[in-house]
Image (cartoon, rainbow, N blue to C red; front, side, top):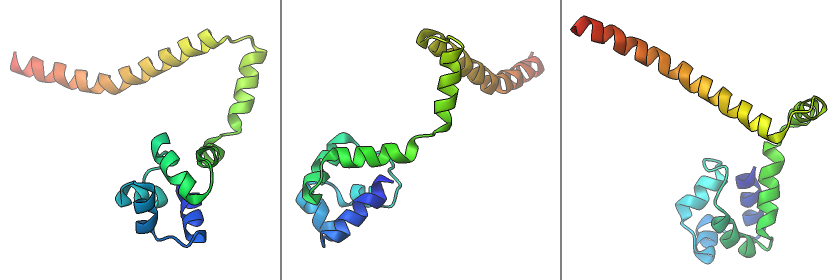
Length: 122
């Protein structure tokens, strides 16, 4: 994770959390949150401020974050979809439809309760 990598680099440079935050011009609390993995994806601006102090490019952290979030199972899903001729537009339409269905499922119990309450009032 980005925070683990950042902490390791900071310690290897012999910097305390306070020193790194001060030199980079970032809030110590923000840096601590990243290092403790409370913030998994810090802003690009944050990475660009921290990286030169640690002697690396911001890309180092971006790549590190991508390494841990990449799910290889997606490769097979994408290949199956491509093999079956699914286009990008069709996929996006399916995704929107699925999200709408999930939203409707979440809203149904609430509207059902509201209808019951309304019937009691009337």
